[in-house]
Length: 199
Image (cartoon, rainbow, N blue to C red; front, side):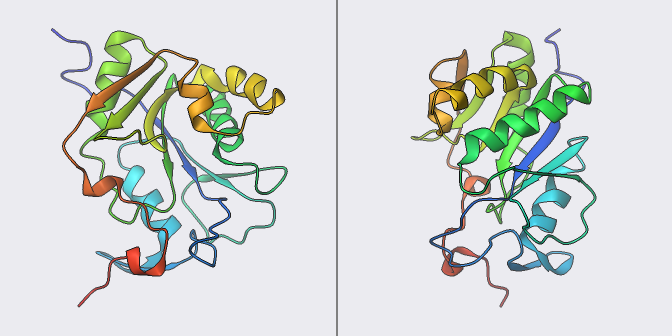
């Protein structure tokens, strides 16, 4: 029997909400979002999407960034605008301290996020014992992958060496890419036009 085939691999979630949002022109996390359950914000929508599958959920926010009350643990970057690598490390460290071996790391700007594909990443992560599993549909989706939480130490070393990109991490650890058909769930909202509109 394949490990993880009958029960889901335990996952924490790390939602990166503190990005600069330059193309959007305003904070993405608090954008109004007209979701299936009614009006909410994008960060609330993403947290509510990951929470049924992942526990605990950590939201990594910028210093002073206003957020609504969330059913998640909010951690704040010490400085603003240093990129997703440092924030990922902060979330993975918190997940490791919570006793989790794996975490699903995602961006807050994913209005169509669904968790259907996550076990296609988590199961091979546990079975193969790799450090990172990313969905691949012609390109890497660094902020929609499963990461080993012990990578927090390696991230700290990379950041100390001046690295800021997620690629710097995945290129230096044991990374497995899972070829998936194009997933609407992986769509990022970079401008207001990218957000769903209810007709």
